[in-house]
Image (cartoon, rainbow, N blue to C red):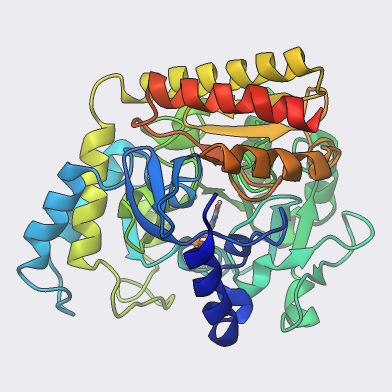
Length: 428
Ligand code: PMP
């Protein structure tokens, strides 16, 4: 496999960009080796600067749910772009975007656009703190909500103990205010709320965890959290940056029938452009400036080209049967991988939601972050490279979910499974 041009680019990048990348996971640190540099992408495929082609199961980490460079999205971008790239005054597409999100996700009675998932989550917790007058937030082990200071926090020695900074530069005084619960543990959540429920501004959760590989909520778990928040006057925030518009048209909240107070989005709503959004109950959202006193702003927020790409993507996913198709493809992929692993005698299991999956080198089931951590990551890393050499690009970390798009057809899945049979034999 030719990698000269990627290697040359990475060498230059390392001189000037920390770690050679503009976002850490891209550096392949976890799987080892060097990243490849993309030349272009189309449908289910990524093409690198050395001419290699990969079936892509990362999809730019989620936005490319309709496949790369979809003509409908590119045309919308090209049309919009000719009228100018940014205005700094309101534009009609922002209104259409807010209407579209509110229609597809009814808990979002009002919406504010931002430029990334990180901005969405940190704005949502500012709103929660401002609206409740409380300071503490609760998050879950293994969940990722972007790189805001309040989220770069790990659990202290017990659930009730103060959070600890998970990165230099996060003040301990701020980390103190973030408590961390084990995902899918009913009792731990009950105990925490009984103890300090009246101090909690918000509980934020990835309703399906996509940042610890892929972990699904236990039956009734999200309902349990909804009830605890309601009882103790804390806001429930669903971080649907990954699951939004993917696991169902209305996101995980539609799939599980839960109404959060606030929701955060990103990825798909930008169709590949830098976008995030947060929304929720009208009475809460009305407290955001300039309607209310809680400040949040953005020079490029609601950018017309980004709105056009997002709206075109949202058009595509509203086609009848779109999510059923995603679910079928994801199921076929995961069943095929499990069968290939069994043939090779490799301990392996998958978790899955429509358009989203987890791969674990261990026997199932995987229901907690502890379960996820017990995957044989050294074996995953070898499998990752064995697949890459065969033209299949999986997420370059044992702790990231994979994504399937509507462009992953029978041919791509067949190619992936043929590669997997050889790769499992290689790592057996
Ligand atoms: N929340 C979740 C659930 C995410 O998966 C991510 C990014 N992968 C973020 C927030 C942060 O989004 P961004 O990288 O756009 O800042």
